[in-house]
Amino acid sequence: MTTTEKHSPTAAGSGASATESFRRASAEGGAAVDPQRVDAVVRAVLEGVHAAIRTHEVTYAEFQAAKKWLIEVGEGGEWPLFLDVFVEHVVEEVAAETQQGTKGSILGPYYLPGQRRLPSPATLPQRPDEGGTPLVFTGQVRDVDGNPVAGAELDIWQADEQGYYSGFAPDIPDGNLRGVVAADDTGRFEITTVRPAPYQIPTDGPTGALCAAAGWEPWRPAHLHLLVRAPGHRQITTQLYFQGGEWLDADIAGATKPELVLDPQPQADGRLRAEYDFVLEPVA
Ligand code: MBD
Ligand code: FE
Image (cartoon, rainbow, N blue to C red):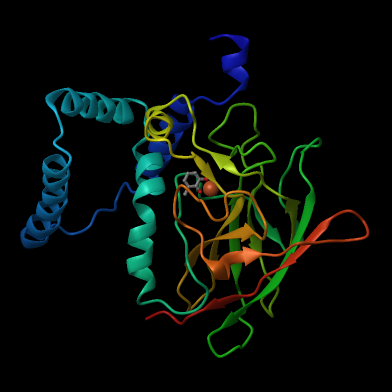
C-alpha cells in the first residue's frame, strides 16, 4: 500500500467496513419468508428488469457488462452503499405512510451502535484539530400531544469537514463525531459538534463508476444522522440537512424532505446555532 492509499479512504475499505457492520447488526434479523410474498415481490422485480431489457433492447455485451459490475459490487463490499443510496428511500417512504411525529429518513450504511453515552449538554468526540465550523444543535423531544418526553436519547453520527465517517475511513479515531446524547428530563438537549461536509460516493468503486457511466452527480447534501428514542415511544431514524447547502435539491440518495432542513444562524462567537424539536409517537 502506498502512502497516499493509506491516508485517503478507498471504496473497497469503506465497503468492507459497511458490509461487516451490516452483517453484525443483522445477525439475527431477516423477515419471515412467506412463499407467496417472495413470489409476488421477486416476480415484480424480475418483470421490471425484463421490461427494461425489452424497452431498451439490451444487447449481450451490455448484459455481460452488467454481470461484471454486479460481481464487483459484491467483491467491493458495496451492496450496503448501493442499496442504501438507490433503494432505501422508497422503503422508508412506504414505512412513513403509517408513522406520525418527526419525519424519518434513511439509515444509510454508516451507523455504528454502542457509541459513547454523553449527558446533555454534550460535545461530540472530536480530534483536537477537528476542521469545520463549530455547530451548536439544540432542541426538545416531545410527544404527539406536545408534552416533554423524559428519558430521551439522540444517537447521532455524521461526516467530518471532509465528508468522511469514522469507522469507514482510515486515520479517523473510532467514535469521532458519534455519540448517544441523553436529553434532560424535559427532553431538552444541546449538542456541540461541527458542520459536516457533503458526502461523495467513492469514485474508485463500482457505485461511483456507475454514477460516472450514467452521468449522475455522486453527491449527498451535508447531513446529521439521528436515531431518536425514549421509553414507550417509537424510535425514529432520520437525517437533518442544512438550508442553502449544496446538493440539497439533488441528493443522489433521494432522502431529503423539506421538514428536515436546519437553518443554522451564525453567532457572535463564530459558531453556528441550529434548533430542531423532535416529536415521538407512542409505541403501537
Ligand atoms: C451516506 O452518508 C448516507 O447517509 C447514505 C444514506 C448513503 C451513503 C452515504
Ligand atoms: Fe450519511
